[in-house]
Image 1: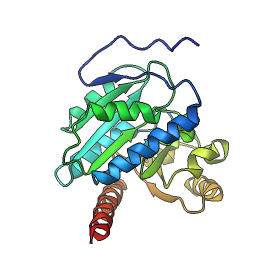
Image 2 (image 1 turned 90 degrees about the vertical axis):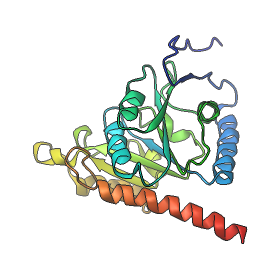
Image 3 (image 1 turned 90 degrees about the horizontal axis):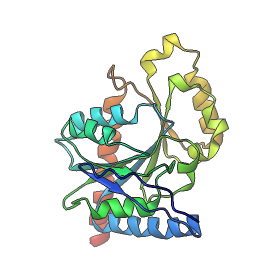
Image 4 (image 1 turned 180 degrees about the horizontal axis):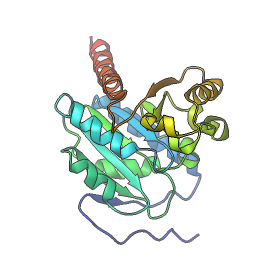
Length: 240
């Protein structure tokens, strides 16, 4: 089988990755477990953020960096089919971001993340966030070694997604309902989307956010800081 043609761009910060071609999910899970062990050894909280394209992941992470960039040592890996644009937006707010160019592949795989981590200085990092490729289908099947998976659903995309794409919400610990500042203009029911998500995954945590109108961002940032602290404390207790 011919490999997918990758981007020839070698823009600042770009890592172009080869695709896994055999025993895809089994191989992915093996690498994901290696990432998980490495993150535990280095005491790094790893968050995988997923959503449809255009749900506001990058804008959320820009605001996150502004709020807690001076409170926690964080870096971001950004997945996209092409271009450096999202990583550039994150660098503009002062966060160290590395773009992973998939060259047409609609999701990130663990081996892509591993390759990118080899190009990123993780010394002293406490929080590593992965902004996955915008897609509610394929990324749901690929473990990236994360501690938590967080899925955004925007008010602009309709409230029926948890039942249409259940695996993504089943495998997520948190759902962020984004762009809630637009609710008054849209036929979107927060109650309906939460009910469907919790029908799929009764344990999923839900926050309503607007990155442009300062809704729910403090709660989101506090959750991140709390999870970083919990992981650090767990390692300290294990060492006793």
